[in-house]
Length: 483
Image 1 (cartoon, rainbow, N blue to C red):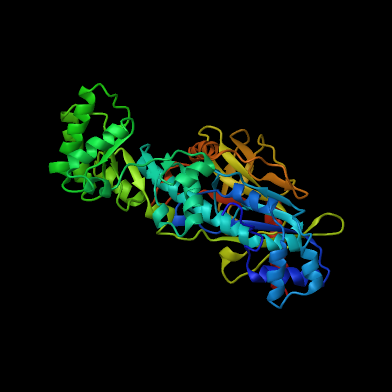
Image 2 (cartoon, rainbow, N blue to C red):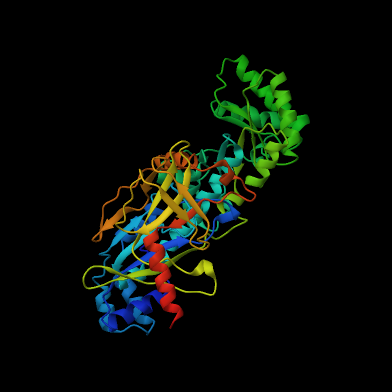
C-alpha cells in the first residue's frame, strides 16, 4: 500500500474537466478551499488530521505509462491531452491548518492556489484523506474526553473498513489522544505505542483458567493484564487473577503494570466488585480495563455510575466513527487570479444557506481570550488583512449580523492558522511525528471551553467574517440576485 501510485485516486469528472480546461486553453490560477459544514457527532469542534498523507500524495503526483494507457483505453481522452499528462506535476501553492489543531465548520482547512487543471485533479484525494482522518481523530478526542484522563487504547483494526482505514484510522486515533493501538503495522509505520493483552481463545486453549493466567504472567510479567470473563468473572476469573498476582508478588517479581480486563457483562457492577476484591487482596494499584462495544456515551455513563474502570479499549465505534460515518468535507472554488495578480472572488449560491460559500483568497485568525487562554472565535478574513490587538474588535454572525460581540483592545490575542505547505510545487513544511502531533492536539483541546466539549447541546464557538470579507460576500450576493 505504501508504494501504490495514487494519482488516479480521483473521480472521473476531475479528469474530464482537466481535459476540458486543456482543450480550451484554460490555464487560470485559482483558489480552492477544502472545508466542512458541520461538526461530527453533533459536537462542538473537530480535530484536523491527514495532512502528512496529503503531502505525500502531492509529492508523488505523476501519471505513469500504465496510468496513461488505462486512460487511453476508456476512449474519452484525446492524445494531445494524454501527452500533456506524461510530464504532469503539481506546481502550485498549498496552505493548510496543521494536524492536531482544533477546527470548526466553514473555515478552510486546506487552501490550494494553482493552475486550474492541477487544483481540480487533487480535489478527490485531499477530501478522501482529510475527511477520514479528521473524522477518526475527532471521535478519538471525544472518547478520550469521556474517559477523563484514563488511558484509551484503539483496537478496531479487525472491524475497520479495510486495511487503509485500519492503518490511518489508528494514526488519527493516536492524534486524537489514544495512548496506544493494537495495530502492529500502524505502530511500525508511525512509531506509536502498540498495546494488547490476550484473547478468550488463550484461556480456552489451556486445561484451566489458572494455568492460562500463570503461563501468560511468566511470559509477560511487566505487562500482565488478564482477561477474566471467559467463564465466570467474579467466581473464577478475578480469583484466579489474584492467585497469580499473589504468586508473582511472593516470588519477588515487580508488579509494574498488571491488572484485569473485562469484555462482557455489567461493567459498572463488575468493576466495582473487582476493585473491592483486588483491594482486599492487597492490589490497590491493579488496572481494571474494559472493552465491549464502548464509545464516548457509554464511557460517560459508566463513569457516572461509579465504574472503577481505569483503562478503556475502544474498537468498532472508534475506528468506524459508527454513529457518524462521514466527515462531510467539501472543496469549492473561491477565486480566480487576474492578469495583474489580484484575485477575482467567486461564490457558490444555494437554496440552502449553509451551502453558500465564502469568496476570495482567504486566511484564518484564531482569537484567544487573554485571561483564560480559551478560544473566543475564529475569524476568516482576506489574505493580507492585519489587525491590531490593542484596538477593539467587533465580531458578528454573518448569517445574523445583528448578533455582535465587542472584544476590548488588549483583552485578546490572534494567531493565523493557515501555514504554507507547498510553494511553487515544492514542499516547504516538515510534518511532526504522530506523538508530537498528539501533544499539539492535547494542548489545543485545553483551549476549548468545557461547555463546547459536552456531548449534548454543546456551546458553539463562532467562525466569523472580517468586515472586508463580509462586504465582498454581500456585494457578490447582491450582484447575483440581480442576474
